[in-house]
Image 1 (cartoon, helix red, strand yellow):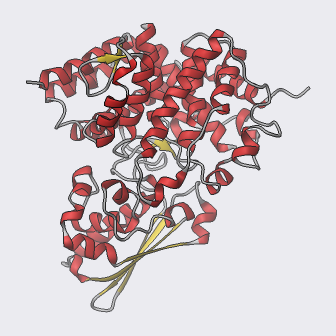
Image 2 (tube, one colour):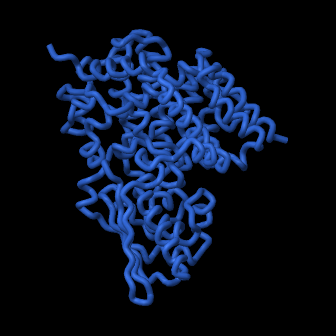
Image 3 (cartoon, one colour):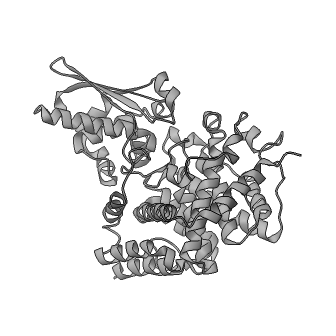
Length: 459
């Protein structure tokens, strides 16, 4: 009898868990945690943060940190709230080999909440995080193309399985228990890409709900709730519902390295599918400056990208969320400002020059670029200049991708920039130091330092 696919995935996760004390893996997990905290602390200034805090305020007191708040909450509240704020500013990491899978803001909130509640060690949490990334990354590789084309958002549909795996390991579940935890999460997963049409902030809920669903599934599995053995491959199972076609080899094959190393880190506050366009626009800006020209020398701009990026065509974005999912907008910002930060995006609507430049950008799909995605996230930006010349610039690997990676120092700098309005310099340094020694201290130490940093800023 064939081994059920969810059991094969559980076996791979257990194998990684046994080897996850590797120094390189620990170092990468710390980078992911630092990056997540940068995104989450930045997210505490968002409207979604206040909404999530109010909506969960009746969930009771507990020992778990609510990022950006001085009080604490239950593990369930912390997982949901921290997942939402971690995704609110589009600064959290994502998987480079699939579409739409945000791992830090779904796996890490669940792990931190449960680890604080159980008083787990930082090393246990690090190992769980690595395994959560592994479970979700492998599962999404099985079906990404068809999954996305049907309108499913893998942050909502796949990431709960990763969060369940991570929490299951923290709870001490064996391979069979882990399979049930992941199967329960798969049975209850959901998330739609319809938010692209108007920039709806339900996208943030996808992340928070994934963290909460994974945590809940692991707790239920520990108490004996079971999932169907063939939850993935059954006729009415996960793959047939969400993809139709799937390649199960990704669940059990030997990968070049753990999925933790397949994530990219965001150096811009925007959708990752816009990054080739941003990098190309920054190259164009430098080329124009080298020639002593400004943005006014551009008569027309045309961008060609792979299918998922070519959907981001909005030339009239009105909200920050719409701006983050508009290639014309981010190209205009990169050309005019030289960066695409939260501050730049917030200023977009008040600058008529930016809007005029945005309207001069057209976007189209290049089938050749679609064919090489996701191995390459490529894009080509072409500019017609007012003097009749034509400039074309191609980017195959945007900054932050595994093959053009952000360094630990890049992420440290990102943390300091994104938290400067939230933490004092001393508090920011204390948080960074706490993450750096996470493998040698309990998770509660990191939570306490986060809360103290916020408290000190309050009058």
